[in-house]
Image (tube, rainbow, N blue to C red; front, top):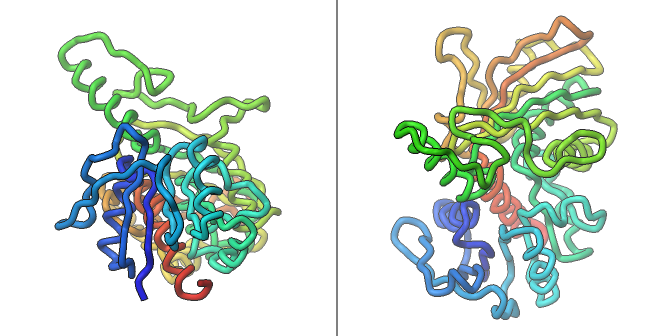
Length: 337
């Protein structure tokens, strides 16, 4: 039996990836509908390599008869339209931040807590975590099972695509301006992103953290284990696609680097590339278009008892967003609907 699927935000970075991945993975859909705001109505959205879909108006769309909604608009749009779709009988897999910490909405990374999908019946919505959280918890899960994690200290290196098409466009335009000695205007970001790094993603909170850093803390606790302490510093860097993270762990029990590599390599969704030589590690450039979470630079941290460090990289538009949502949908149709 095929399903009727709607993709909300089909003209955005993540929405386009959702359509591409649905086609790549041959998701069993009899009908796929592309939805976006009124200004995008009538545009053509690519569905795989050979097909296109005419974009329809989200505000006017009747979700009756739709089985699954893959949603990646802004949070305000999600707040309005995700409940409307759920009320019409669809199951919504929502990529925005709006629903993630709702106690009645499961927050799911299939390699980590697929069983939480069963909680969708409360609101008819399943939340997709933050891009940086997804790749981190995929890497943390096997380590936590092997030795227990007490504390995580993570610094992220997040590409401009995490801020949408406008972020990528700003990096490109500022780079061009730099080389022709033109004035560089910062609009999407708080400072120039070209040839720079910005230790500020999302709004500042009262304790000095940014909301992006807060998301990594609370989402990790909800997905993996509420007892884990997390401290994050989130940094925007001048790359287009792919997020990287330098992660330091304090473990409950000893785990040497050889065993850590073994348990990581055996875990679903992880590829370990860790040769101690020039180029024997993975960078964001190589993971663009790839589905896995790549782990490199695994080593003991002698500054703390049972310390372990690693470097984690993934395509933020795929595993960090669109792919994770579609993997949730695949699990959903396998065992829950």
